[in-house]
Length: 621
Image 1 (cartoon, rainbow, N blue to C red):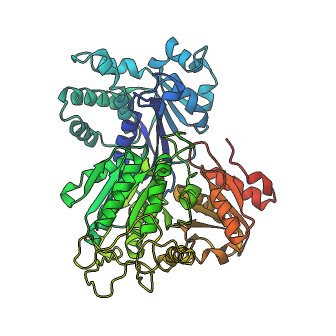
Image 2 (tube, rainbow, N blue to C red; image 1 turned 60 degrees about the vertical axis):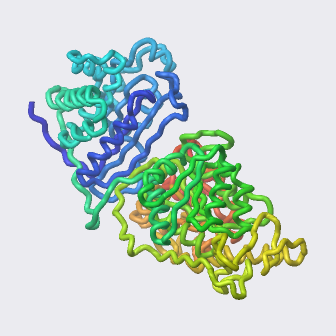
Image 3 (cartoon, one colour; image 1 turned 45 degrees about the vertical axis):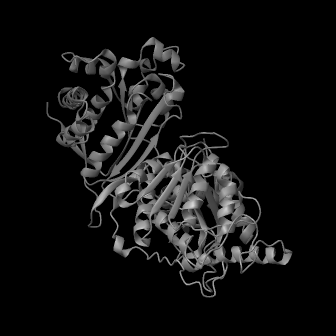
């Protein structure tokens, strides 16, 4: 049967199934193929918190969304054009988001009475005749076809069932004109130590590919051309990978050993995993017994002269709070990475949120300011990690780097950086004892000297008690304490010297300024681009530095009639901006564990422009 080929500019595909169906692997493998084909890509893995949620349950649905394009894109897409569902629970939780007229591929083999009941159905939803009217429905018994492909193998029924995700992958490879040879090599590499499983998955993958080729239900195949990238060497990278490589690069540039201490916590754990792979580059990692020990060990590493790092998520940052305060008062260079997730308490461990900004700014006892910056894309995590290390060393202060679950697990094409072109990280350990005072400061940065313990003639003590402003001796003098409070705050404020220009898209004056930070970047930048193409006087500024604020921000805010602050929280940056600049900023707030959709931003701006000021307070569910 001949099939016509349709060229598309971009496609959004979502794979959804039980947490044991291998949806994350399926999505990742298709992402690799899109990258090899030269597409611009953006991914959104979405999985349950439980290690193994009850099979077939709504809570156990795992999804992976991929947006691939022949043009530049910034988000994983608002709604899927293609939805592959492997069971009734995945159907129920995802079908409502499929674009009208989109392709719906359903594994009918899983739509049995038991699974339907677990998903809350009293009848089979595939019997609804309107499905075929709303979507291009393809009902395929993937479970049975997988078993048939493996009938000559000695795998158990359970082992055979685990291969069905590769049938779906093979089918999508055929539909979107991907070369199957590369994926076969990938499967052999991934399952190299288990040749039986490698052979089985390859068989099922080929069965899915050939099903698309021979089944008469598919009239079209599609092609998405390569995107026009700047020349260079690219790789796919997730935010946590980029953060890890940024920390390693910073240590290399600074000529220091990277010392990382951490405790496992979703979604930050993989930073420890990635860094630990680079022992041959001098990286030292330690997994300690709890979050308090992790920050304590990192402070020890900084005191000993290493580039010291610890990472966690909101609950762990709360436990580290006292230790971070100790790093503030001792004025040691320490990088703290906070990969935000849904809260409070344990909250939504695998879902994204931006609700830890106020914790980061104020979540320590006493006056304990520190520089705070936030990454905007997975690849940007690399550069923010380098910058956090540079500022920590230059100003002798702990620095907090904010990312989030969306950035940590999402992926994008990333041009490999020229390490020689990265900013210098100059390290000076004082060795001259003449005139040494513990808190004698650099006149430009107010940083004290970084002295490695044991250096002859430079014996000194630091600690949690307040110290004399020069000698470092313990001091309870009221005026000295206030002086030290102001000096430490001024030191952090001087980081503005290193900030550079704001990240602004659009004009410096207009009707609406959209102010964002962190992982909302893609949705905000794309939404504002669409509005500007319609002739709207809308601009977007995305803040890298959240403390101190860029000095160019205040005049920019005052140049617009409206200021809109979209955040995945209840309005934390808006609270800060209103308090600091006395601007009537409006919030667009969403706390569903999901990132913004582009249309949510567009609609909010349009409501502001039409005068519906109060209606932008919350994003639609």
